[in-house]
Length: 280
Image (cartoon, rainbow, N blue to C red; front, side, top):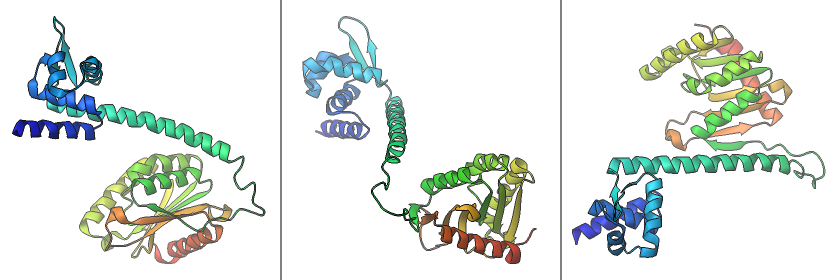
């Protein structure tokens, strides 16, 4: 029958949203029946009578079911929008807890790993040339880490630096540490209207939040985008190239702490800064 098919679809969706078999079956039939007794729910949902009360209590604690005291006790489904919202909130809290546990494990792993890292290898450890990460949230987090590690200077190369709001605090902290910050942006006359508008807004924010603590110049061509820190003392760099034919979320960025590569990128930046970039 049609309603059975719809109940099963509802149950499947609830399972996909994180409920177990008994929870999803109980809630799906409660949504169908409305206010009802546990014994009725047990019969219709095929959840054993020995388990139905525990399952209903679990659903109530998750904010999916309301309980009306009486003899017998009756149960009601929350409105569908409330159920969906509660499931999202519940799973988000679970994920946050899992993330905190993972972060604790990660800290312990790094500290413990240092005691054995390359201890069995003779000679100096090899510095890998590049590490590839996806462009987006991951590359943004890596950029923040690089800013945090800067001791002397940060060199930034970007078209409009539209990600500034996400890294503004890190740049402020760097400036407070007396880190020199230089930014090369695309000449606004070379930008498409939407990018030009973004750049104008970002420049306004930079001036408001960082005042004259950084230097900005403009160039007609941006060969790569990214950042470089402390090239004269080891340093690190993150960069990506323009790839108009590839969707943004499929692009990749490269991270390097190889001294020769970092110095090479810094030399390119210096030549661009001195000979091609201008103040506007």
